[in-house]
Structure formats: structure tokens, C-alpha cells
Amino acid sequence: DFGLNLGIVFQMRDDMLDNDQPECVEYAKQLIPDYRSKALKSFESLPETETSQALKDLLAFCAERKY
Image (cartoon, rainbow, N blue to C red):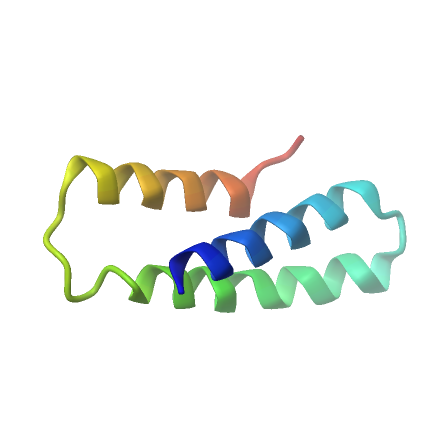
């Protein structure tokens, strides 16, 4: 589940950065938080480790990147 939702977040942000159509950008801005939340739910029952934190950091980067 994490990988699927991370991929969706990455692709939506990538499309936002490449797209100059305001309606597409606004749509992606609305959906990214939902998919980010779904990805983070994958960790709810797992202990906090360096690896899980690194994956959460990667998700944050993908969701928030500006380039």
C-alpha cells in the first residue's frame, strides 16, 4: 500500500510541476494529501525505525517538492 500511494503522490506532484493547466494543478493539490495520508497509514502498526522514518521523509519530499 505504501509503495502504491507513494507512486501516486510522486506522479501527481510531477504532473503538477509539468502542467500549466490551473484546473489540473488544483485537482492534484486536493488529492495529494489524501494519498499521502493513505501511505502513512501503512506504518500505523509498525515500530518506528530508521527505515520507516526514511520512507516517511521520502513521501514528504515527493508530496512537497518544488522542482
